[in-house]
Length: 220
Image (cartoon, rainbow, N blue to C red; front, top):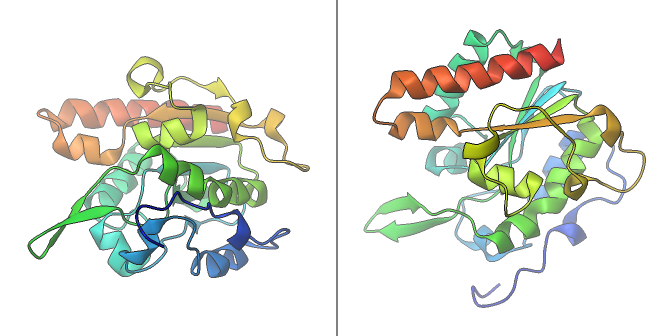
């Protein structure tokens, strides 16, 4: 797909009635819903408990994730695992995914530099995210960072204004069918990579853990 073409969206690659996350993951491997697939190594789908009570949604895979085919396995992923432990969340009840499933980047010499996905990429990849929610039926979804929060709550949402606050499931994230949206809560917090970039990592990390403690309390 030429980069000048408008994304066609992922819907035509999403199985109409998927029976499992593995089925979705297999189908997503062939997705060409936007131009990002052409320069990425592979589709990076979600992983974790098949009926997770808590779903973390990040922005997109990074360079390490793109190469390994798994989300949150780089430095940000290691920090997230530490924060999950410090917040008292059982990792066996967690599923981790991204709003965009391919690595968007620019080449600088031999280096691949992260580039934030645009609204068109978020929209194109949205069918995969909603399909994941429909199978997982989580109790709580936590958006990690601005891109994930906008994918869930809409383009006007600001993490800095509403982080750590439990909110009802956004109407924009509903999926047709028997998806029990009334039973789900949502929350937004900073992305672990923001902690790694912070001038004072201790303060930023404590803020992330505090938000996740609120998530743990909601699950309990």
